[in-house]
Amino acid sequence: MSPAISLQSVRNMSDSSQSENEYQKGVKHLYENGIQKVPNKYIFPILDRPNTEKESHVNEANIKLPIIDFAELQGANRSQVLKDLTNACAQYGFFQVVNHGVPIDGITSMTDACKRFFELPFEERAKYMSADMKAPVRYGTSFSQNKDGVYCWRDFLKLVCHPVPDVLSNCPSSPEHLRKQTAAYSKETRNLFLMLMEAILESLGLWGAEMNITEENDILEEFEDGSQIIVTNCYPPCPEPELTLGMPPHSDYGFLTLLLQDEVKGLQIQFEEKWLTVEPIPNAFVVNIGDHLEIFSNGRYKSVLHRVLVNQEKTRVTVASLHSLPFERVIRPSPKLINKHNPTRYKDTDFATFLEYISSCEPKKKAFLESRKLS
Ligand code: OGA
Ligand code: NI
Image 1 (cartoon, helix red, strand yellow):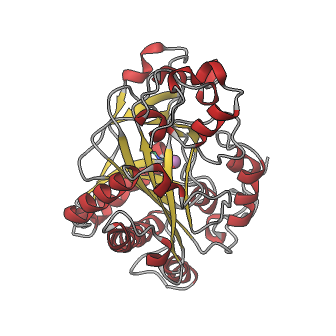
Image 2 (cartoon, helix red, strand yellow; image 1 turned 180 degrees about the horizontal axis):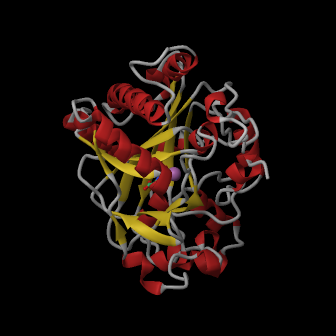
C-alpha cells in the first residue's frame, strides 16, 4: 500500500508531481507514512501561525465556557438558565451543553464509527472525494483541495443529513455501523438543536409559551425542515505543529453548530482578542452561534472566530453538526428585532450565496459575514 517515495523528502521536492499526489491524499496518509516534516503546502505564512501572536503564552490559556445544563433549562429553573444562555450567546458566542439527553452510548458509537472511517485504507476513503462543494457526501483534506493555496492539517468527511430523501444511502457503507450511527446521531442532534433554538428564540424575546404564537412559531416549523450537515474532522499528529493549523480562524455559516470533541485539546476561540483553548468536558456538546444567527438576531448574538491547533502526539477526532434553515431560505434580521433605534445591520443572504462565496475564494476569517454587513 505505501508508495516507494520517501515522504521525508516531500518538502524539498514540492514541485514534483509525485509529492503533489502525496499531499493531495491528506494528512492521515502523510502521518501513516511517517512524514517527518510538514510539506510546504501545509505551512502557514508566519503571521498566521499559532505561536506568533503578541503574547506567546496565549496558547496555554484555557477558557471555561459558560455551561448550560439542558435538564435545568427544561425544568423549573428555565428563566435563570435563559439568562445564562443570553449572556453566553452575546458575550462568548460559545457555550457547552451538559445533561443534554443525547444517549452517551450513541455519542461513543458515533465517534468510534468516525474514527474507524479514517482508519480505512486511503483507497476506500478516496471513493468519496469530490470537488463539488454541494455533494451530499464529500471526503477530503483542508477545506477545498482544488482551491486552497495553503492546506490546513485536517481530513474530513462531510455528510448532508437533512433534508435529504435518504441519509443512509449518502453515507459511506464502510466501516460497519457508520450508516446506522449517523442516522441515529443526526436525529438526536437535530432534536437537541430544535430545543436549543426554541430557548434561543425565547431568550431573544421572540418565542414563549405565553406569547401570541404567530410569525416565530412558523420559524420553529421552518427549522424542522432546516438543513443539517455533519462534518467529522480528523487531525492526526503533526511533526511540526507550530507551522500549521488544523483549521484556520473561521466562523460557522449556520444558526448553531453542535460539536463533539474527544479528550484531546485543540479548539481555540477568540475572546477579548486572545486565542483561548476550550477545555474538553467528556460527552458535552460545544455549541456555537453561526453567521446566520448573528444576522437573524441583528448582531445581538455573536458568530465568533475559532481555529484548531494540532499536536505532535495524538490524533484528535471531532464531529460537528451544523444547522440552519432550509438551504434555499433567505436569512435576514428578524423584523421584530428591528426598529428606529435598531436598524437592520445586515444584508439578506442565503446558502447559495455562501457557497458561491467560499467556492470563489479561500475562506478567510470572517470575510463572508463581513461581506453581509451594512456599514
Ligand atoms: C468546524 C470546527 C472545530 C474542531 O468543524 O467548523 O470549527 O475542533 N471544528 O474540530
Ligand atoms: Ni467551525
